[in-house]
Length: 324
Image 1 (tube, rainbow, N blue to C red):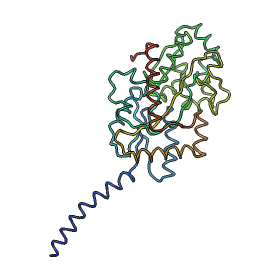
Image 2: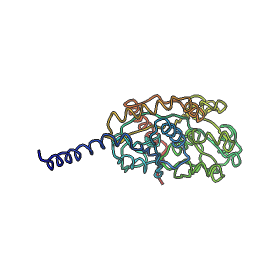
Image 3: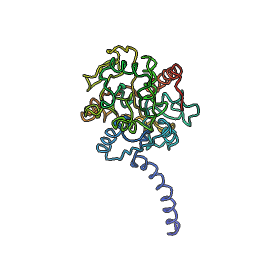
Image 4: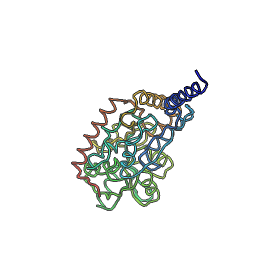
């Protein structure tokens, strides 16, 4: 074979083989991006940052958080749904996204149809927290008495219309026969900042994002909305213990992959997440945030999310909650 023919054959082989090698190696070596659909400082961030920081240190691969707040968590969800399904993009959704279908008639994504459920990250009860400088109540009976003595006199902040913070407040009002003015924000972080600054009176927040402020004394916990007291917060009584037996609201956080992401990539990512959460470091952080460890993954997680969607649709219907 002439030398020029051998050179052409080798060159052709390199053209064929190099892209195949790149396709095989690139997804496994590129950084992984996790869309967190709320601004920094909220409950989703409270779990995402220690989790993916620990995974980056352990794996030597970058796990990058992309905060995309807006529209009650729906802006980021829509962006994540359109990400390339190559195993380098994931989405950290929350209970807010099970509420969204009942609140937003024209979502540009479907949690059920556009994503693959990977694994639950954490589940925490909601907590009723007040700014102690603005609200004198320290127990649920005291708060109820204050609300009834000052109809429409207090307000509560939320992470936005249609979020669990908003619906937890509406459910509380319905069950307690009280009224509190709702003030929506673009995420739990900004709402908490204004609560601490005294711009709003109280919040129905996920315990994780309020935990540090409770421990510092900047916020006072009135009650947790769980069936039992939260891990790490044994001194905070439940609403059930204080005379509101049916007020139970949990905030959960879970990871999803864009539809058509290879099953191998989904399973590997989920296993890495659960292994990291099981470490002593992360277990201590989860307890400090009042969180239960994850116990759902894959199809079981999908069924749970479907049941939550039905539950919150009924809450929205009964409360009459609407977007402004």
